[in-house]
Length: 107
Ligand code: AMP
Ligand code: ZN
Image 1 (tube, protein in one colour):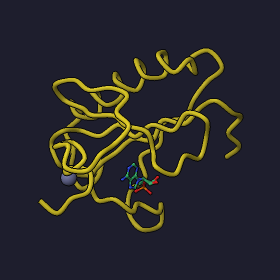
Image 2 (image 1 turned 90 degrees about the horizontal axis):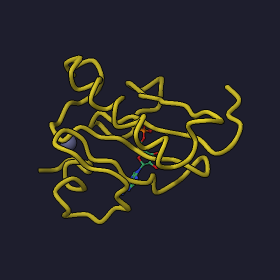
Image 3 (image 1 turned 135 degrees about the vertical axis):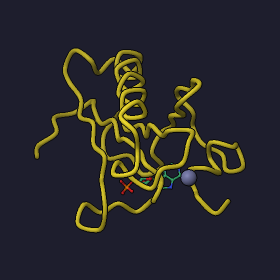
């Protein structure tokens, strides 16, 4: 398997795990853009949101809600982002959701 996030999920590449369940794995972004910057990744490989079933997006979003509470960013607010394709700057071709919080986030 030549996919970075598949290898992180398998534990072949170390990561700072913050959450795991049957469907998703979540870990801290190696290049954080905010005090809380977590990547939420489905355990099944999809290249992007274009390929993923709605159940997968639902599992990722439910995990994001739990993580936002655990990180203490639920009250002041946070942002969920799924970069898709070149114009959005998607660099890893394994679907992932960014959870950003802990500071004001201008567009
Ligand atoms: P994207 O630009 O939406 O494809 O996001 C990919 C994200 O993965 C970037 O924010 C990177 O900083 C992050 N990233 C790349 N390699 C690693 C790694 N080994 N561990 C944690 N995060 C990573
Ligand atoms: Zn993968």
